Amino acid sequence: MYIPPLPLPSNPNVELRFRAHTVEESLEYGNATEELEEEFTTRYLNLVQEGEKHDSALWTVQDRRAALYWIWMNTRMKHGHTLSYTCGHCNQLHQHQFDMADLGAELELLQVPPFVEVMIPVQGRRLSGF
Image (cartoon, rainbow, N blue to C red; front, top):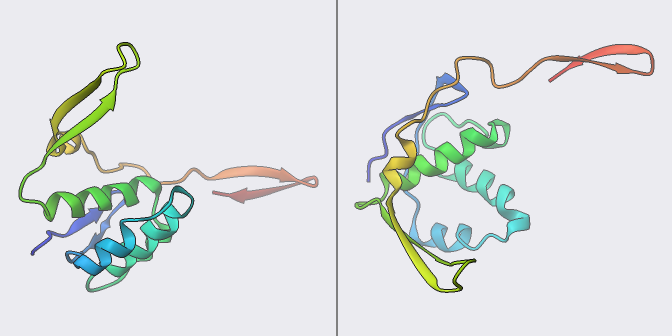
């Protein structure tokens, strides 16, 4: 399955290429606990990259979520999803159907660097950092 290249949202000069994950990889990475979610995300995004590799541990959180969304959207035939939840008002189970493609309708690439440089006073000296 072909996944189109994704410009890294925080640095559009970097083009990311991904392959579809295997069933085995889905089973391995699909069961991450909340405590290990970021570690699993990093390992998964690094694993499914093709061509020149870019360590996803160095991306912004938004970059990582955009890449997961990009892979998900491009490995599904249908983008519809149903969310079930118990209503806090009536205690009944409700369902909401939506199209995951709508989430990406207003995505934008950053027009500024993905960091802010600051000067931090440390023991009477001013140090710069990000």
